[in-house]
Figure (cartoon, rainbow, N blue to C red):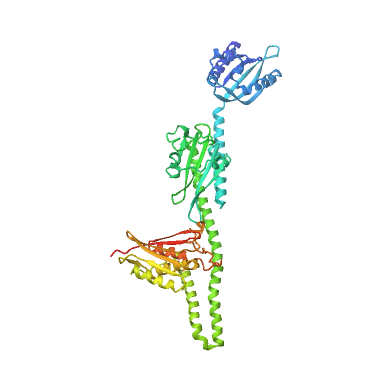
Length: 533
């Protein structure tokens, strides 16, 4: 039986230590390194000759020097330290994460004279764990954000939640969501939400403009990611600023992601910044793009919900208006019929009044039927060829019967122009506008109608010198149920006249718009295509 000698055992142990991938180091209690294997050289970068004789603080970060005192204290008591996780520093200055197992070294009398340290590099393991944690965290955030957005119907809340979530996911120091919104008048304006920065930081600087850097996002050309935006050739090309304006948030790393509607229109953009370079990756692009897609759907749902709410309110309002408008002529008719029952001989005097009220009912019902057809996509025109002169003359003659005090003058081109239109509907458009001009200019009796040819179109302008329309109401006059108070401050009608005018004109491939100045009057413009002879 072969028995290993002590020398042989020591040689084997030395070979094991030298071949180990772990760093195996020994030191005195005063911290001086006494042995250093190849594993230590691989992990820390110092050769054996560079390390032996040096203090162990050679590889300890300055902010962790107190750990050495704790370790020495335990070693003096003869205690082992198992799998202690900490950070150490290499020759190149890189930090590595280690799992340390430290055992006391005793002399032949049992006195602790030093320590043996085994250090395993677990940097990759920790980085993998951190990466997994990040993925899990991001998936959880994506899931929570998706559920939250799906249930949210308030535009401002959606903007804020999306901005907060994407700023966190991207690791940005600050983020912003700029969103183009169209108001009830058809005007466009910008909403924005911020994360990681006070609102004042942007309000003082104004909204982003379509500068060379921003235009890719606002035009929907793609995602913009820059490790250092200050080195971008487009940077600093937007006067009056030559770079970032004074007080701007410090942006070096830059990421911008356009937000598209389901029809492919750019409805906004998510912008992120960080004062350090190279903070955003392709992965961040994908994460933000994913939430941007969910945000677009939620914003569309919020818009539709707001429209439904608005239409519902208008419907309730309309039912009240319609009931009142229908009840008035019906009540009048009922009253006249009761008078006829009591005094049959007055029938001749009452008949014109009954006809007038019946005509009013027919007009209201006709308007309601047209709206129903328009909304159902079943509205049809009965088009014929008619001269511009005859249709204007007929409309003006009808309008003159509405008021004996107003003077309606008209000018038309000398040349004979023909239109291919539904004469009844165009006559209704002109008569509606003329009657409005009469109604809203009680003290200024002159009304002018002017028709002029422009290429293949004729433009008809009807002007009054009445009260005018407030600027903020100008674009609303063509919407359903919009009504303006008359000169006695009473709101009249269903608010459908100009809405139907717009629908009728556009059905003929024309345009209608209004120009007005309060206290000076209003001009309504209509364009219609001329029939080529």
